[in-house]
Image 1 (tube, helix red, strand yellow):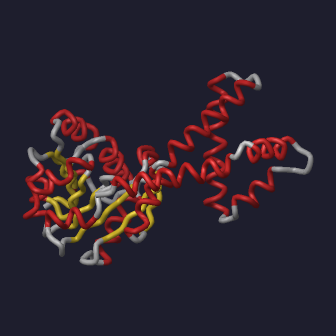
Image 2 (cartoon, rainbow, N blue to C red):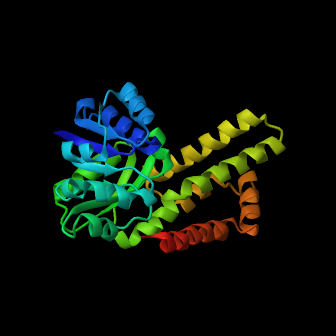
Image 3 (cartoon, one colour):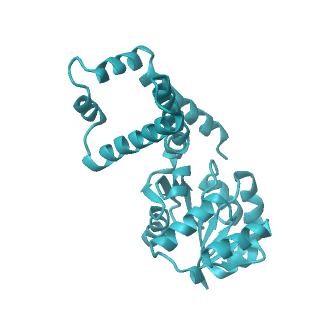
Length: 266
């Protein structure tokens, strides 16, 4: 029996497979995959050497851990086809907005279900994921899920009531960061930098600043003050950002995403 099976072989599934193989969590022979598009399955096999299946049912039968890597509107249909086997497996869903309750409604109320919200930086092994687990899950189940998703970045356990907030912050957050990188690069171009150089400097600056927050444990305000010397260029720029309402705009953007996530949850 395979250690882990994937139903769905899209970009996120590929990132997770690549991460667990790179970190040595699993071997190719430990992984089996299925996708409704056979070409995706063949590509995953060619890239990673993983085992393949011809149906979702086969994946569920062969795996101890079943990862649902399909679109949210496909989850119920997939579960209905694999519910007999899924009810005896650890089921991990990465479908945004699909609650543990809705999964258990199909495969049984005492089933072991972990709901995960990964984000797109997982595609480059720099993800920020959060997960929550149903009460029947054991500590080993949670450790298994944390190990899988820690292979593509950071992963934290939260209560399910916080998952909509997670979706808004780390799920939507990369798009907000991309917008900020683009705006910084545009400012660099306006000041005379070539576009490619401005983009690289902006992206590397954001990456480095984030690393300082994570690695030093210091408050972002303290780190900001380290850069903003009295009467210097930085404090003038910060003054403009504050006058234009950057801080409140970002807070409102995260909260708007949270409200939308709460409306969409099933």
